[in-house]
Amino acid sequence: MAKRAQDQSAFVQHVRFVGRAGGLVKTLGGFKKSHHTVPDAVNAATSAFLAKLCADELAADAEKFFQLARSTFGYKRKDVSLEVASPNAVLSAKDFTFELTYALDESDPASYTVVRSLYGLRSTDFAATDECDTVFAQQFSELVFVLTKGAPVEAVIDAVEGLDGDDALKVEYPSDCHDCTLAVADVSATVRFDGSELAMVFPCSGSPRELLEAFVAVRDAFALSKKPVLAALLK
Image (tube, rainbow, N blue to C red):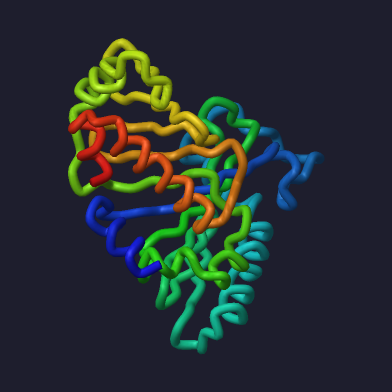
């Protein structure tokens, strides 16, 4: 596993695992149907309203992760801390940082989204431990990282489209080419690239270890393409 961590450090500057969940604002514990109304816009006032409504759920969820991390990793008091200031909670440990954030859905203000983010990992090896699997099982559906060496989005698009007769990689993109989405054969995830960040978005949530293993498959597919611009992305 040490070799894998060393290999990944060559092409990854920063990595974070992201998970998303959500629901209707009116289902939050703080919402009182008798005198509250559902938000119809996202602004400072409605965001502050959400922060009050979700306070109990956020505190309970954050405490659950704090206790699970403390017991699973064997942390002492000085090794881990929790700060809750609705709509955000930050669990800071000596090996990682984990955040929970509630926000109104921009496309549907009557709904909210909870974003779970894991970052600042001590090492890639840490993400592959059984303990990390236990604490963060099925929590994340996106693996996002800043590449050591990026590439123009147009160059990546041209490289994929130049793979004549090769079905291993497919690409979709908007007319302005501000980003592109790659589909990799035999990998159940879409790969979004914007020039400097690459994100793998999975149809189902998994643990950090599961997401990293799937990413290695994508790296290998890029390397085998024999297109320098693709191979260099994850090299």
